[in-house]
Image 1: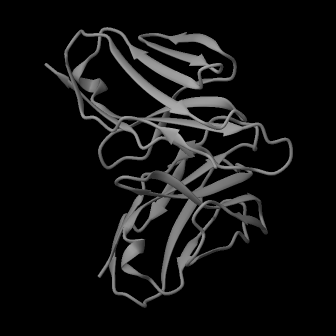
Image 2: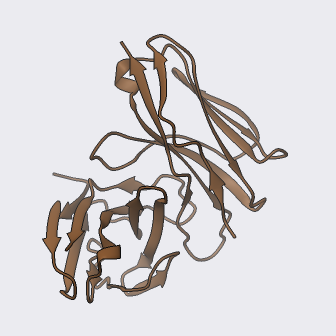
Length: 113
Length: 114
């Protein structure tokens, strides 16, 4: 199906393990974003990417790594998961930086034990 | 520092009522304002966006921006149970070069009682 998809939808892992969350979009949008959503904090930007091979930090980047070798994919890696990274992670995309509409994926619920 | 304030609720109203949802912000550089709706266990979806001060209407939804007061509102007329969701305000500065994400409010949980 066309759109923006995330996988896995649910993930349980242990402290110290590496975890990669996948994001794929079929619109060929230039910009992609990773947010985390926590009670009491709302949505916070982790990283964003303006195009393939161009990424930049958002508000809460510590402990995360991103890459963008292809326009359609924007994986997010937790190098050594911590309990504070338990959250719901949303990927989003938009046509360009001046495009107000960001389209969100369905989210990945991550639990770090 | 970017900061957006939004009452988390829950806000419970009877079906058919007019709903008013609000956000305040402190960063005068914000120029684009959006409202997203998020159903439980789903991603946010864009409802409304505005650039200038004033009102913008789309069906039962009206977005209002008052830049002088740093205050935005979303009104829902003839509210329906299907409007029950969390409503997130979001805003961004004008960025002529690089990309920037949105700054979100924490969301207001709205319940429309049948």
